[in-house]
Amino acid sequence: MSEERVVLVTGASRGLGREIAKKFGQAGYGVIVNYFKSEEKANEVVAEIGQDKAIAIKADVRDKKQVEAMVEEAISRFGKIDVAVNNALVNFEFNPVTQEKADNITWDKYQEQFEGSVKSALNIVQSVLPSMKENQYGRVINIGTNLFQDPVVPYHQYTTGKAALLGFTRNMAKELGTFGITVNMVSGGLLQTTDASKVTTPEVFQLIADTSALNRVTAPEDVAEMVAFLGSEAARAVTGQNITVDSGLTMN
Image (cartoon, rainbow, N blue to C red):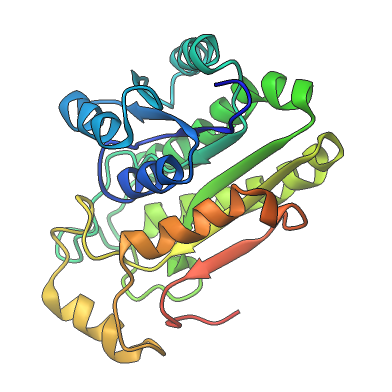
């Protein structure tokens, strides 16, 4: 297994994370399927990829000690970690009806998303760095959002947390490039459908389809394809970038 590339995908039991893990598995990677609550679904992903290629490990990515224990277990199984995908989404649903407005949203809501986006990414990066530095090779891919370019719905705390994650991405790319490590962000549109978007109203999805260049809503599989590309050797000269996969709803 040590000759093959190995990927860690956080929040990989459901939705986008599940598709990312499966995509890397299809490409022959060893896959660490991280989960926090959905053990049964994580084991289903492992079964789809193959017991010889994948392992499910529970860890709250906001907790540094749990992340370190997960990485230690993963390296004991696979020998290294080449790619880390920060995908886990903490306590958020894309519900335009229940989203708190500017006059009543609290700082605690922002803090929760900063920890879910930036703190968790920091925990993962710091925990996988020794392996990546030793091998002078690494790929870190952070999952962002196109909402900070076009806030179709003002999901204040989520969008702000992901915007901060872009700053994190570019600073890490600048520092870690000398070790052969690339750091990028992939920003999908509102994806149809994940657990987080299952409460999104049909009207919002229709608005997105009507206003995107391709007249379609982006699927998790579309984003997974780009993540897999950035995790590959083909993307060796791409770092510090935010690549948007949203069917042309926004354009950089």
